[in-house]
Figure 1 (cartoon, rainbow over the protein chains, first blue to last red):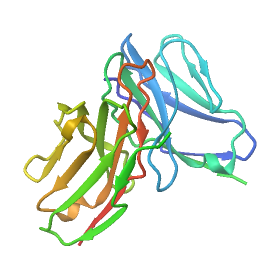
Figure 2: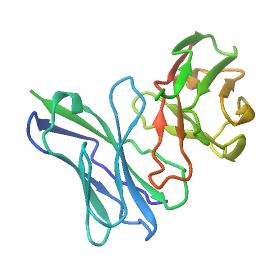
Figure 3: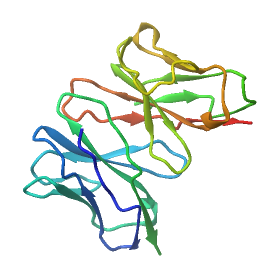
Figure 4: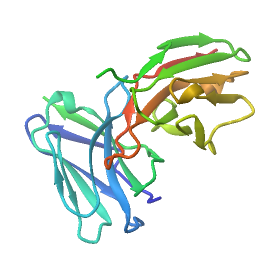
Length: 110
Length: 115
């Protein structure tokens, strides 16, 4: 399983885009990149995932570099409710063993 | 659609006592997970079930922790005897195995304090 590296914390102004980086230089060809977030006192919540191509859904966009060694989660218009810990996880295809790291603590500032 | 249900939400016990947590996954979800989350850390996988069989329990401290998933639905996680370092939030998650996303759905967790 790919080891992922994320900055421990980030700040973002409300209404601006939040760009959360993740380094996964050891990722293998069949490993997906998953993003979850955990708002205080709640269980983690799925955000988005991808393999090679960039992905977008109603919550966020995921940009994966061509060499797949890193990715960026983009929250296009951050709100105070986006304040949470964001986890980047590498998951081999066909497996369901999610290993969480320590994540990035995002604080959205008014 | 009902989410993952967990109980109790909070439990305070003294060390060496026992405690049990219950989880009811989303209906039809074949895969069930128990995670331990210590304050300030990410969730740590304890055990993973596929239906009523154990897929992975390599991180479960088997001398004091046990878990079962009877009939492939509800699950219980037991700690006996508890230690101070077991103070944590115990999260249950389920997943509809077979779908491409493999998305995990988490419950709100059970917060354990061991005194």
